[in-house]
Image (tube, rainbow, N blue to C red):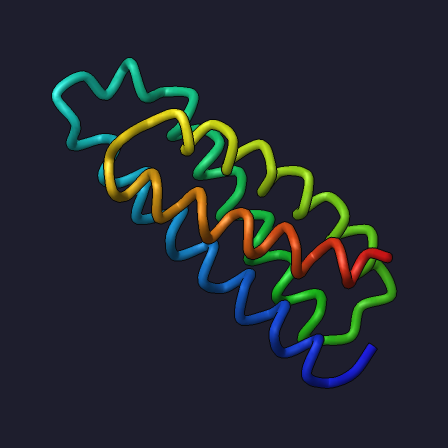
Length: 109
């Protein structure tokens, strides 16, 4: 892997963590946040694993590939959940998750 690939993946992970955190907070402000519970839980899981993946990549962890594999799978699940909702924050989160999943898949390979 090149330094640019590492940086791009770290950037995608960080952007996804922010998008997921924003989405979770925005879902809590919806008229029926209980209906968004699944989305909120996935957002929180995804944000946490994205932060872990970015940190593992930044420090050159021997486990970065395995963490990126997990991150890609959680990002895909979060993207699928968020894509089901019409709110702009969910759509933006779904895109960030898809971008991060793609970047992490390349690091896990």
